Image (cartoon, rainbow, N blue to C red; front, side, top):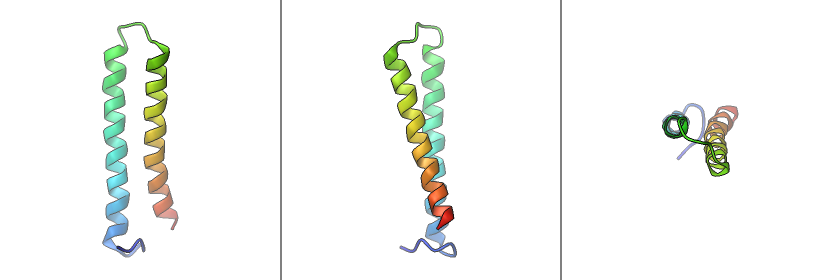
Length: 68
């Protein structure tokens, strides 16, 4: 598997990372929508921050593959 920019794997991996980030963002939005009417707890804050960190990690992997 090549990670060269002219390789189809290069684009497939970048696209796959974007799809994973999109899925995690969608889950986060559903989670926030469910707790919006309830009292927010520290656990909810931790869950949101953890998901945001996961999304940032996915986007960083795309950035990394583009920079190579």
